[in-house]
Image (cartoon, one colour):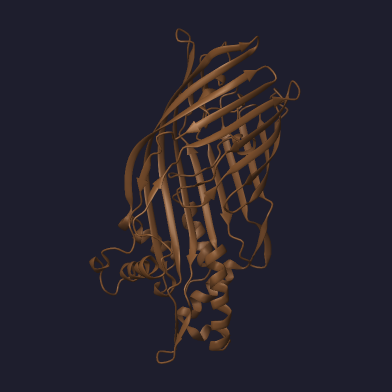
Amino acid sequence: MQKSAILLLSSFIAVPAFAGNGGSFLGSNATTGNVANNHSIFVGATNPAHIGLAIREQENVRFNFLPALSVYTEVGAVDNFVDDLDELIDILDDPSTTDDSVDEVLDRFNGLLVTMGEEGYLTTKVGLSAPLFPFYFRSRPLDMVFSAELSFNGSVGMRVLDDTLRFDDQNNKFSTNTSAYVKSGLETKLAFGGSRAFYNLLDGMDVYAGAKLNIIQMELSKQVIALQQMNGESIEDVVEDAYDENLKSSTNMSLDLGVSLVAESFRLGATLSDINEPSFDYGAVGVNCSDYEESSISRSNCDTATYFVQEAGEIVSQETYTRHALLTLDGMYRLGSSLFLTGELETASYDDVIGRENQWYSVALAYESGRYLVPSVRVGYRENLAGSKLSLASLGFTFAGVLTLDLNYGLESTDVDGDSVPRAAGISLSVQEKF
């Protein structure tokens, strides 16, 4: 059986990820969050009220030069997850690969599989904006700023569906229904928005309001891959071969509304996103298994999926992903002419497209140099209040006013191949038109 199954899955995940759904941040937002910060080209990424802040009064157009890319990866809190799962796959394929007795193998893995089922997962999210997007245009007759966005997001997640490991004395083989459960969401989003100052609350303090219409094309797929039925094939090959078999594509629209209180020294914003709560269906698993050839891997995986649906009750066959309405609060406070404090909070927990629970908040300190030869610098902290409860430190730079590089480093760790590594990490890169 091929080694490093989870690492191979990781390489599969990284290849097709330029489409899909993911909560990845683009550009400098990977450190500051999606806040009322007009130094970021992605100022209107969440709150459409901020679209009106994307262009200076004397300018008419602003856009991103090249595609912006972000990548984020997260793993579960299971030490030596890769090594242990690799060893189990080898033992299922050939029991002679271990020197341990049958009882020792059963005792070890039946305890370990429960932990893997509870904590073992791998998630990768990738975001990509199309060249020239987002694009901002100021209409002076309407006294508004309009925006157009074209972006692609990809999310792929794998977790372990655990089952009892057994030994067949007659065939001298170990067996288990333990499987890798892979879910993916591939999203293409075209969005049109607009914003303007609608009300002067006090002298030098304006209320901005905005709206954004999102046209979302979503491809959703999930697969159950039985470890003992791989027949020497690697996980990523099995995933690719079966990907189209239960892929379901659909298109829907969503509406975002936002407001922002804008003053010289601070900005406070609120966004209600996905007000109409659009839904998208996953491809089904564990149905019509007789349509596959009796001895094929697809048939074995389908039968295993039926087991986890009907007997174990760990997954559902038919599944719908709904983007629930979410209230997000954001703010920025000017500490000096070039120093800014930012923060963002999602006020409720929600499941992302691959079923991971999220509720993020972030705080950051940003220095904007305003000079080509001196880079702008930002540092930040982000934490998930739900689900994984992971936290990340962030560090970002803007070079020559146009090139942004932001890094996220997880503060919790796990052991991989005997080395301590962060459970989460991310990177974001963009080249934008200078503000």
